[in-house]
Each structure stands twice: as structure tokens, then as C-alpha cells.
Image (cartoon, rainbow, N blue to C red; front, side, top):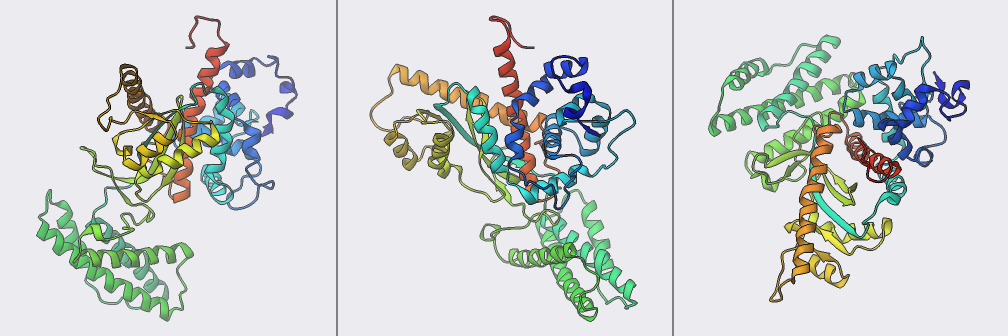
Length: 450
């Protein structure tokens, strides 16, 4: 693999190579030109070392592959297979393969995510990109804000499923394995009987509350017994046999047992930091109140939008009230784009505190009018237009990002890795929009871009 700038054929990018000329005039080439690569590279460490650092690929190649994964909305393996055969993707990453070369390391995307997770923050990347793109923003005085949830790829969590997964891990994956490796007689338990009972429970189309409660109590007791037996085996074996990841998983299972034991006698609303997934213990239930999906499991994001350019204000796996972010969001917008004169948000933001803040700072909002004084005709038209833009453009961006940029279900594991995937999905959508906007400016008057 060679750097594109070191190839004699591509020393002068004046159209000498037909392929490179076609790439520069394609949408992918314009997206490449809209991204400030040098500024992004300055956010990475000078030495490409550390967990998962593919130093032979380069910093630009790593960031470019993350953009391509979101832009193409494909899996890691399919992305690399297409990279091996598509010269336009190679130009985008700045690394051109020879005719007899191909990338055989199919876990390179996992290594890249591990490297980014260890060495940088998505907030720093966002600051660089928004600062570079704000020159293409026209109505910078208009700010839109709303919250959404980017769901994680997990099975729908129930207490019975979670408890059974913990029991399976304790008994089959650890306890029985350690007993076999060390020649220890398996301790007595009701695991096999409970396995048959759980299979019969799972086959039923619908189970009553009493049956489910009885099942939960039985699994809580079985899990408590399994944890104790595993601890005895580890104590006799001086802790040998479990890796660091296994010890972390065991700590998570102990916390799950405590929480599930607490839920047997207490309502779920009194439990904080509830674990809903054994493989992704950082996930929390996000109550959204939607008719078809009242609860979602993933990261809640408070999103800001300026003239179609979307960026993240806050991204957290714990639920938060987005209406408390209005003042902070206006401050962040002022630092990046300047003063806010018009603000679009839904009714949840229309608290007395937020109204007073907007009035004191002379910010016109689309909030429903409060008080005896009515809006005049021009204010009604402006308020209606802001509400329409927020409901169509901003809500539309949420749907487009989730449908076309890999944010429908986040499949990677790890809190920070999921945040990076959400960030690159949103920024890939921004890059496409900026590239099309710049392409329209280059066209003759009256002609529209394809």
C-alpha cells in the first residue's frame, strides 16, 4: 500500500489521471474536500501507538474509514471488501492499493475504534468540524434544538431473560469449565431442572404476572447460589482461570443480582442505574413516552441545528431532561456561531425559566404565547415558520441519519465506541449536506445539482 501523494502518477492533481479526475468531481470526492483532514489529524497523538493502532494505515485513513462506514451504512467486513476493489474509497482514505494488494485484516475497524476510544474524544473532533463548516452556514442566528434516542442493538430486555443469561454465564461458561479444568466435582445445584423449566416458560406465548414473578424468584435464588459456588471454586484455585474481562462480567452479574433482588419487593421507579443488558451494562432505559415505543434503550442525545448543520450538545446513556439544556445550548451556539435571535423548540422547553431567559436575551421563540398580550400578524407568521422548520427539517434529519447513516441500531459494544459511531453518523450526514451545498454554488445560476 502506498500513500497517494507519493505515487508519481498523482504528484500533480490537475486531471492527469482520469480516475482521480472522476473522483474529485464525484459526490464522494466533494465530501472528501469538505472535511478538514489536517485539523482532525492534529487531534490525534503524534505517535500512532497504543491499543489497536494500525500505524501502517495512517491517521487520515483511520478517520476516513470511520466516515465511510457511516456514509455507506455497511458492516465492517463489507466495507473492507469494497475497499479492496473500489479505487474511489482508496482515494478517499489517501491509500491506494497495488494490483496484487488487498487488506486481509478484517478486524481493522475494531482496532481503529479501540484506538480512537483510547486516544481522543468525539467532542474535540466535533469542534474542529463545526468550526470549519460554519463558513457555509447562512442563517446562523436561528437555532433549532430537540432530543432523540439512538438505540443500541440488543434483544428486548426483560428481568427473566437477564437473570437467565447471568445464570448461563455463571454455570455453563465458568463454573462447569473451571471444575473440569481443575478436576473438581461439580457442586450440587438445580441448574439443569431450572433450564428445563425456563425452556417451558419461553415456549409459552404469554405468561401471567404470577408465573413470571415465580420465575424471577427462582432465578434470583439460583443466581445467588451459583455466585457463591463460583466464589468458592475461585478461592480454592486462588483466582486462576478468569481473565480481566471475566472478572468485570462477574462484578456486573453481582450487581444484577442485587438489583433484581431489590425489584422483587420494590417498584422499578425506585431503582437507579438499572442494568438491562449483560453484554452492555452501561445501557439504561430511556422513557420517551412515544405511542409505539414508550421506552428505548440507547444513548439520549440533545441535538442542535443551524441552517441544516447538525451537531451534538449532550450525549449520555442516562436519561436527562432536555429542557434544562436551553441556556447551555444558547451559550454553546454563541461561542461557535454568534448571537441567537430566533429559537425553535417543542413545548417541553417552554418553562417559565427558559421563557425569562429568552426574553432577557431578546430571543424570539416559537413557544405558545403566555399572558394577555397576543402576537401580531408578523410574529404569528414567524413563529409558525420556525415551528414548521423544526418539525420538518430537524425531525427529518433524525430520520435520515437513522435510516441512511447507520444509526438505526448501534451494533458496536462499549459506551465510548457507541458515542463515536453516533458522532460519525451525524457528521457524515453533515459532510454530505455541505458537499452538495458547495457543489450548487459552483454551478451556473439557475442550474441545480443532481
